[in-house]
Image (cartoon, rainbow, N blue to C red; front, side, top):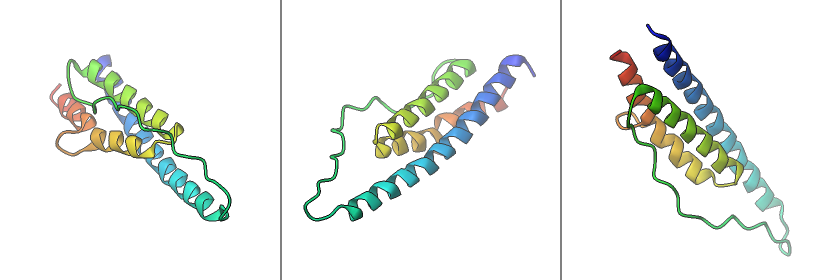
Length: 116
């Protein structure tokens, strides 16, 4: 097994771990915002959610194994940026697109690595 395969597998493991870690943080963020909404009194205003912007397309598998691993890393970072910008719905959408059983980028990368 070459160093590129080991590197791509390491990126795959790290991206999967980070995706599940981010998903847990998103659930906590939603819970925290729900608590803040219930704590606000009748005359107090809650901060508005940011206006949605045009979202980039969801991840797709293209190119070499190394390119796919780099794409997966970028999309995990994009999900994290969405969670940090209080857009957990888009972050969830990205993560689910990464780990979808048949079409997810991480699963396609895993199948490609299994063939090497």
